[in-house]
Length: 115
Length: 112
Image (tube, rainbow over the protein chains, first blue to last red):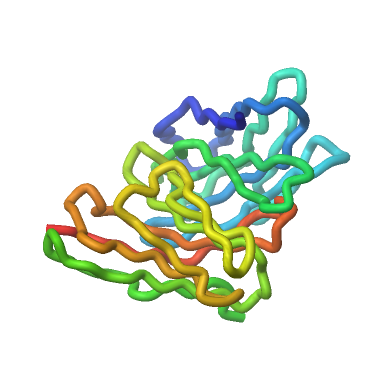
């Protein structure tokens, strides 16, 4: 069975500081991997996704994530956080070859940005 | 470019009342999903539909029913609302094959 763990429930950083949000997954093979962001009162927006190839993936809003097979991780990073990045972030995993395309989500990491 | 449209955005129900949450997508996607989001619990799958005419239970289906009316529409019904169903409900769709979801903006439901 697939599962996703986001170890940090809440992270606080200062504006301009670097950010890393952790994501670990459990899956028998290399899955498809996603990061979504949810601003307060909004739906979820896709930040980036990994299907295959280069393990460093670039996304929107200056975010990137690195797939590390040996660690079963897909951590999200940003070099310099902006106040507008305050939101909740969800990591998700999907099975390769699935005709349904169901995703399994972590419980989310709430990001607070101090001015 | 509407994407996934959910109605209503907000709703307050009394315990025991019924209601239907509507979801429609205009991207010709095959698969549609209903999730609930609760603090600290992330997103939990209620029901999903792999294609028109098929529906299946997810992790937390009790107290809910769904209808895949056609390829565009996937509705979620609460027959007898309970306070435990107070939550934010999201509809999502994808074309299958795990290329990611498109989410609706959510329905915030309060049951008193």
